[in-house]
Length: 95
Image (cartoon, rainbow, N blue to C red; front, side):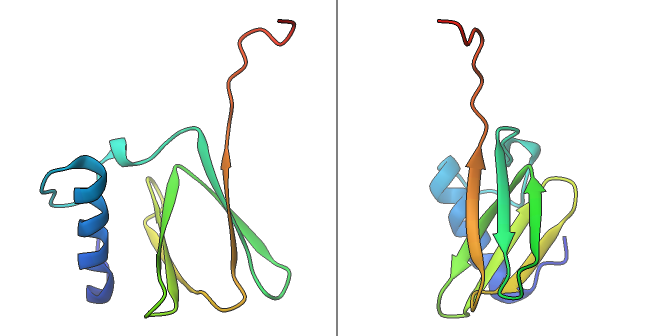
């Protein structure tokens, strides 16, 4: 992954906080099949990402989206609205 240097340290901090150990990069275990990220942009357009998570950097005024299969994407925070949608498994809805 050719992540811009300004995001490398932030990603490594996130991985250490989440997993409690030094990591050299992302793995499939970092992405949840139950989680979908929806991004609404100021112009009314939007994007959906499955198997993804995001990190905010208010100083950079950016949000970085990391996906399991589609790399990373960096967007400006201004006018961007993020929604984290979580799927719920219901084995038997009649109970």
